[in-house]
Image 1 (spheres, protein in one colour):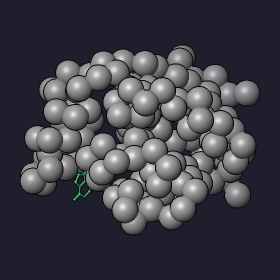
Image 2: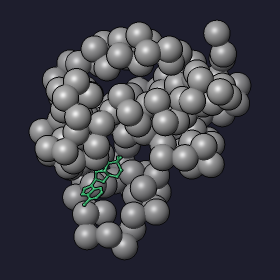
Image 3: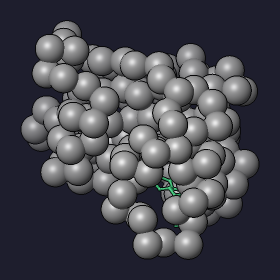
Image 4: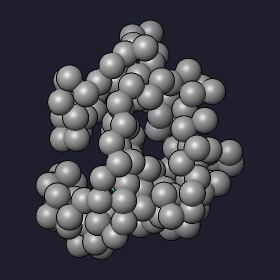
Length: 141
Ligand code: CMP
């Protein structure tokens, strides 16, 4: 299995609940390393640029409003199969459909306030990582 990097975001709802440590613990206990972090409060315009792929979806406006409602923690996770593993640990986008024991099942309230974001492919991971981080900000263990 290849060593990959993926982007993880702890969203404003999970930051407000003070569960950052619990979420990072799940990544580390499952073999992922945090190799870059950035705490940032996005503007709605910045959130819109990050989620531009969804710009024609009906949830785009509420998504940008939510993602700019408070600080987030953007992280680069590194490890074997990091893209898929991160998404397994997050659980389904809608927490009502998320498997028991996943981050969203345990910490998310709704499909809008769903605690975490994770890149859905290796290609998108590279694009999303570069949105928040320069190469010089990322240090492998
Ligand atoms: P995320 O993985 O960050 O990617 C886009 C976000 O849009 C998603 O999590 C949800 O929080 C939000 N969203 C709201 N409604 C929907 C929907 N119907 N389908 C997908 N994503 C949605």
